[in-house]
Amino acid sequence: MCHYFESETGRRSARRRQAPISSTVGTIARWMTADGAASGIFVRMRIGILDVGSQGAHLDVLCLRPGRPVRVLAVVKQPNRLAAALGADGTIAADGVERLVGSIRGVLRAGRRAGMRDVLAFGTSSIRDAPNRAEVTARIAESCGIELGFLPGKLDALLTYRGAREWAGPRVRSLFVADIGGGTLELAAGDARGARWAVSLPLGAGLLTRTRLPGDPPKLEHIERLRTQLARELAAVRAARSTPVPEDAVVLATSKTLAQLAALTGGRDSRGRPAITRRALRKHIPRLAGMRWAERARLDGISTGRAPQILAGALLAEAVMDEFGLSSLTICPWALREGIALTYRLPLDAAHGDRAARTALEDKPVAHLVDALGALRVPLGRG
Image 1: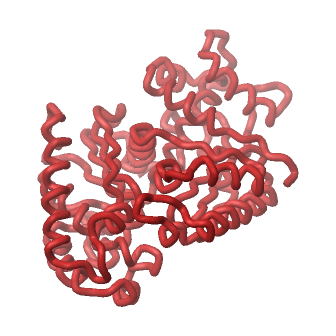
Image 2: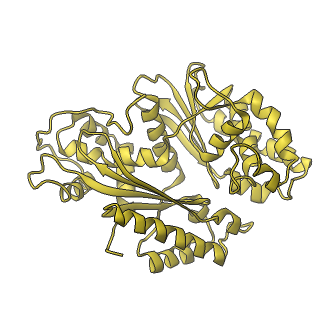
């Protein structure tokens, strides 16, 4: 396993090279250089990555340095219980909007105290796909002083794969990554060079709970209908891919829902890391199905916020393993935010002579990811 946020290219010469780089790359490199030494030979940048989802606001304050591991300066989390404020159509209720605003305001204050000067701020699908998204983002801008951005689902999947790939290490020959969020399911597969394919589907655990599993607890007929739906939709994804997941592939799961299922089932992979096995999951699904939300929240490893959606998450994990022929999912602690940090720092490495970073940025999909991340950047006032 790599060191925490270790640059994929390692430490290389800091000599400046004059070869042109894209305008977006150059812009980001100038942002970074402006925060560093006047010579430009060694720079650093304090940047925040703010991820606002259906459970809370999560802010990582990082120090980016060319050719060096990303340094984590602060991690700030504040719950918002947004999932409880989502209507059947995804509309965010007024009380949920205010909790959302309060969580963002709180983590930004802490970030400023940690020296954060800029932030990449984005909302997950629970906000991105809400019918009243425009009103919600306007309220956030008015109260918090930032414009909350959004990433398209496929880019979310690619960046999550990037973070998981770094955690898996450079020797991985084949990698499959699954991430179950509140509103979407992200799947990606590839190797150490990158993802061969990536998809984002509107099959998040929270969304499925609201729309497909009414009742507390839900009826058996609703559970079986959901199983049928998941099998059908994942079969279509599988059929569209020309290559199967190899038997020797490293299979990783990156979300909190999956991590809590691993804690509940007590699974471990061959290296002793937390994992979900298909056999153990199938034993626990009937138990979860018969429990009310409050009872699930008392189970080991299950949080109050995710108790309502943990059954949908379990059914979705089971369906993914069934369709792609997987016996287990190893929990990976690195995901979207780590992928964002590692991708966003590429222009800094490239501007300071890193050939591998420059080569990566010549790849159009990678350059597109850098463009998308640059669009999320918000300079912070004093607040």
